[in-house]
Amino acid sequence: MFTFPLRDGDVPIGALDLYKTNRGSLDENDMAAAQTLADVTTAYLLNARARDRARATSNVFHHNSLHDPLTGLPNRQLLQERLTHAAALSKRSHTHAAVLFVDLDRFKDVNDRYGHHVGDALLLAFTDRLSNLVRDGDTLARVSGDEFVIFCEDLRSIDDVEELAERIGQSLKSPFSIMCHDLAVTASVGIAYAGPGEDITDQLVVDADMAMYQVKRRGGAGHQIVDVPHTSPRGDHNVLAAELRTALTLDELDVAYQPIVRPRDRTVVAVEALVRWTRRLRGPVDAPSIIAIAERSDLINEVGDWVLRRACRDRQRWLDRFPGTALDLAVNVSVRQLLQPTFATMVAAALETFETSPTSLVLEVTENLFIDASERVGEVLSALARSGIRIALDDYGTGYSSLGYLAHLPIHVLKIDRCFIADLARPAGEIIVASVNKLAHDLGLQVVAEGVETTARHDIINTVGCDLAQGFLYAKPMDATAIEALLASRTPLPLHGPPQPGPPLGPDIE
Image (spheres, rainbow, N blue to C red):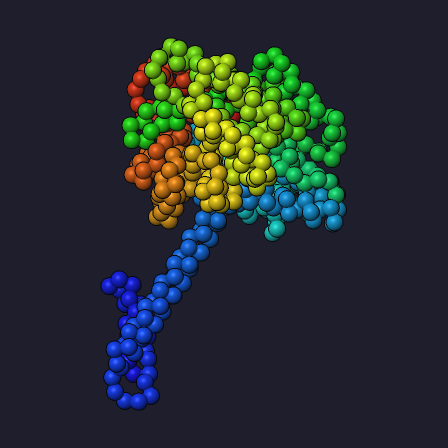
């Protein structure tokens, strides 16, 4: 018997045993053949190990892309998948379904008074109470900050949902004991209800969100129902669409800007434009709802054009006052906008009107856009890129995360989603962010870390080598006047955010 060691460098990983029927040593040719066999075996084992590690990393990446890093609950992406699955079932079963949008009242006060570590502990404790209230089969998701969504299927009637909302209120009558603090909190709950056989879409979440804000405006600590089946298609949605159209006509929309900084020196190098709308009688509407209303009412092109032109106008004013300032402008684009035949012409017209260089504009798209219409999208993006406009892949890691998009489409900027940045406290989280950062740099892409909210996250993304960053640690979205004051100071942003003059421009959604 002859034994040939199998090694990975200097590390033994096994042995290959060969048996010779006749006694005696192996001649030179036999030794060479045996060693070749051992080398091939080693390569096979190493490849198998690499595949296992890649599969494990992919599984972790996939799990993290669908779950909230703090609570472990499903995130907005997984909630959407379950809504889509439930839609097909409801057509056959004719059962009821409902969405409850739950938001803690005055949660920001907890963070401001006791610190984010106490706030995170409160969110975990609140998650435990909610988990004990929902039924098996219901989906409890954390969609952002202190906002949770409960998706209930197979309901007998709306009474079941109201009972759940009341149980949520009752569960909060006992204070939470968090790190030697007794915290008494309440919650606002919005409910959207779909009857037997009715469509189940993410519009349920939008409607429940709007109902929740109605509770907020009444002072919180209660619930409000929106009955979707009995809302005529020409009713509430058309009212919202009409109001949005009027707001466009009367120039009543607004744009907030969130600074994007270089981590190494915290210099503001870009801003992301975010649409804002405050209804005259009912208060602010959050950005996802604005986009949903605009898309449902075919106003998305007008809204997108208005946001781009307003952002270019504001940037021109800032640069006129501070000549020589290098400031890029990032604007989000939906698939419906991008696929319009006039989209490229509209962008070119806005840039020309406000003397904006195409190389200073970054159009942000999401991964799901490529799934919807990949061939046509690729053509449009390529045409935009040829004009000098850069394309950013936003929220990377929350969609399909295909590396093919990065290799074959004109992507210039990769924005790592906040769910991975929030997971940096764990070694695996840092490894994933570092790996994505290296991959992007190897492909010649610029990397932006989203959702940087703590100095610890700032230090890690700076060490890892992310080119740019944005998040509440540096600054929340602010109006154009505040950005102008920021540029006037010509100083790096402090790691607790700059002062925020003036009233807030609607709900902050990072």
